[in-house]
Image 1 (tube, one colour):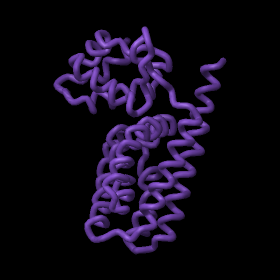
Image 2: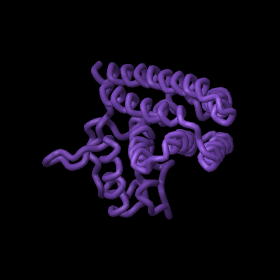
Image 3: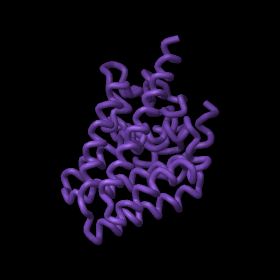
Image 4: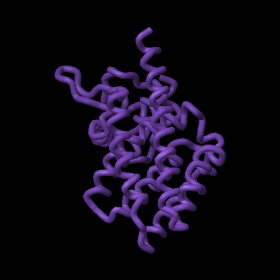
Amino acid sequence: MSEFADISLHRVSTAEAVADALVGLIVSGVLRSGEPLRESSLSTKLGVSRNSLREAIRLLERSRLVKYVIHRGAIVVTPTLADLEDLYRTRRQLELAGVREEPNEDQLAAITRAYDALVSTSQLKTAEPIVAADLALHQAIVDVLGSERLSTFYRQICKELVFYFTVLSYTDEEYIDPETSIIHRHQGMVEAIVAGDRETAHDLLADHIDENYERLKEILTARQAEVSE
């Protein structure tokens, strides 16, 4: 497939990088729902070892983008609307709980650094690093809860959110003009957190998550309609 040419991963050996590339192929439709992931073919097209690819597939299995089927091996799974609703309900609870808490000095500094990194990364105008920086900011908000278990749980949730954030970024082309989309949505929220205005920060974050969810629901619904035609 010619679509693989632009994402060859020469000299990249980490499973996370390979998993990110596979997510990109799933988001773009190169790898479609129900399609088996052939290790020999994919490792050659991506320019990585089969061991790295195998570990990447395991990561995607934990992210629920891949499942193993008897006699077929690993296949691509397109998240359903039910998956989206469950994930965003969980995300909403954790992030809003975090933003209600008063951050200590270190936690506040971590949120500020994460926002500054998002602003800096947005200048690249490339979806994948912007998505990673976006999720890192939301992780910093959850970390205010001061619970390693909850922070670890949210990090696992982020592995699923990567798919949805990337779909949204590509579909709405947010990465092309991040200032008026991504940065604008986060700036007021971070400013409210820094100012200690937790009520405003809570309301802005809640609106952001809800708008995110509704738009993703529209996108997934449209995609399912295309598949069924």
